[in-house]
Amino acid sequence: MKFANDETTIAQLKDRIAKTIDYLKNIKQSEIDGTESKEISITFPSGQTRQFTGQGLLLGNSLPNFYFHATTAYDIIRQCGVEIGKRDFMGTPPTS
Image 1 (cartoon, rainbow, N blue to C red):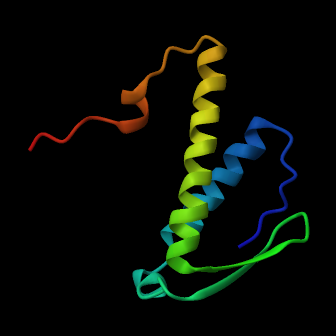
Image 2: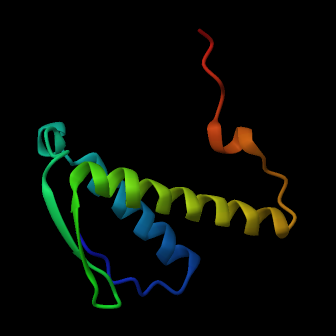
């Protein structure tokens, strides 16, 4: 799925998040099981194309990208005076 990436309001961003969550909820486990060695080619906005395996894309690109953006958003929110901390990100620790 590809989104237009043209949101200009908070309401539009919330709608995009809701659409993304719905999309992810509809992915079946069988669609991703066994894709660790699947060959994946990605063309970046610069035009550069890179080859990945499924596992390499997840561990070497997707997760680091996610954590970079989560950290950056956290930093911006804190700079704006919102009192949030690690617990807001990690949630309640397990009881067992």
